[in-house]
Image 1 (cartoon, helix red, strand yellow):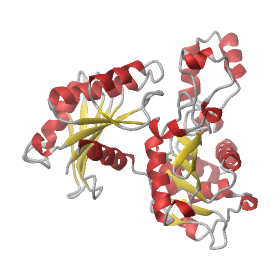
Image 2 (cartoon, helix red, strand yellow):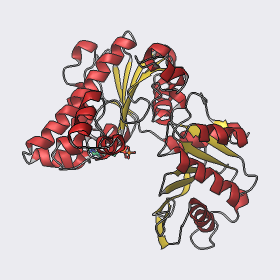
Image 3 (cartoon, rainbow, N blue to C red):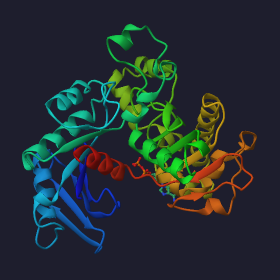
Length: 398
Ligand code: ADP
């Protein structure tokens, strides 16, 4: 089976053609600068081939057409005809409280995604453009929407409600939704499999630490709480996002610097986080590691603050789950940074978390990094959101 996985952003579109049973990726690539000029980067992992082309992409429609054309290209392509694509799976950011699982795309599903635009104003319109472009390029091809929020819909009200007047929840649907749900689902499911069943992994905390970061508390495979909120701005500090912050900080800045709410939010989303704490060194954790190594105090503060806030969430979620069986690290930082994992787990022995420094040297592959006598099994499990999307798509199209 061939599933085309699409992740459409406002000016970019990522794609992977993959087998949902084996996880093998036949081709993958990226359309950039949609609406400006247009650039396609296409890779064929089996041969190592990489093609880069400037192609006009005034809208997502031309981007999808360029992807279709290169996939069937006699020289650079990997399939003979678009008929060889069985179905298309789309990453969709916000499913609001309408979607608790992935769904086959029809008019009602598209309308529901449209209805969620006020909750995901930056991403949902782009996701819809990707869906509609595929409908035009491949009429009648089954398409599935996989929501970043769906996995978190099992949270109880005490976790998802904000302590503000009820009408903002009932009339405006303002509540905690959480994101990276496809990753949290993939990784927690894999953790349970690796532990030999849910009986050995009742209480799992997943730390998805990348450019954007979030944690989730998972009981018997179901999400109980997560660190992101109505939007991905909440939770731990991230590459450029502030994370949890007293709302009065925003009010003070808006008043003093005559900033609009949107301008202030742009600052909190794009100019804050470890980038700001490091006084502009970088939002990339590799650069921060290098700068801290050279003695840069601000970079060290950014790393310390990040580890501290992640550690606090682990403590909070261990309390929420009434104990802990497994702690899992995933995504760019979680999979690759031994120093960050060690720093986060420092001082958590009282929770039963003991890291083995040798095992912790692992990078980018499934491994236990705790000691044999650690009460909590600590894992590194690489995430694969595209595979989860492809598997959901295949299951719904059967
Ligand atoms: P995104 O949220 O964009 O999907 P990723 O999950 O790809 O992000 O994570 C990107 C982050 O992972 C970057 O900040 C990068 O510095 C970090 N990262 C990747 N490799 C390492 C490493 N070896 N050490 C520290 N950080 C790393």
